[in-house]
Length: 417
Image 1 (cartoon, rainbow, N blue to C red):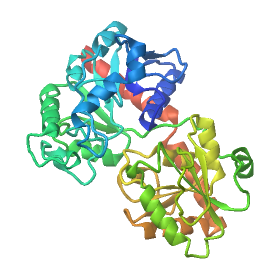
Image 2 (image 1 turned 90 degrees about the vertical axis):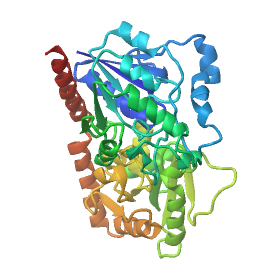
Image 3 (image 1 turned 135 degrees about the horizontal axis):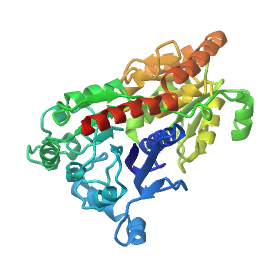
């Protein structure tokens, strides 16, 4: 059996990293797996690059991505993908002749909506956000119009029913009506959203959490980790990070700031310092009441694992998460997590077992969670041990690979019969 993963990237962004990890897990299990991507960052020969006319010219100017953004540009305050740009992916996939095509994050000019019906193999699609079943937005925020037919899209600031989101939704409804597809989501929350959507209401949905290499993401001597990162040994370190964590409002930096401002008024104000990865120190610093250490962009798994191990607690204050890989990575390194009791993070953090689930979007509850994790050394050790156990039970890369192998085999056997 040969599996081909289609993903916009192999390493850039959380969805890409999750896809590449699964790809490596399948190969380590002895299965033939390849990736076909729009933009390649690794040197892995099993990762192939989409063939484009005048490739270097396209890559330099990001033509496909810019074209795909064009219809929503200046209308949307967040990420929005119309998926309309023509491409050569279908013909390239046909030449590779996979047994199963596994779709991942395929937006920003990589695949268009109509491409999916042109594939002849069984399709598995792992959703890494909500864009697969909305009228184009990556996360619906407070809107539930994806359960109907979109239109009058608040993210497009539209009051018209027949707007860009309705056009995108109509194309999906038409092109995917008879699609041979199984949807996979990394969390129960996203599975519920997909099942309630008008696009995937009749489509089988499976939940398979994202996996990790637990030989890399593992507990590490905390003083040694701090030495490696030039962090203080005499403070309690609160960790926060993601891709562009302080500029992406979905990551909840504004809520964490509010929580820290409240925390500074307590007896913890001289004992805690904040560590941020995924962002460099800004020219104009923001006073959060605590000293802040910026680690910048950590582009490899070992550096990320050391950052998790250096902290006493990881805070993931996201407003919406399909899964929340920083939380699972932190648990694997034995560092408890404080997050909101909402969306995909509920599948990762077990309240007062390996972390703390704060009341949704309430900074006061985040403060309560941070203090609860830090205030008792014996409790902290208990949380740390349980964090690692949760990762071993739920996020083992080989377990994820075996669950996918079973799904692929089921689909291939169904096709043959």
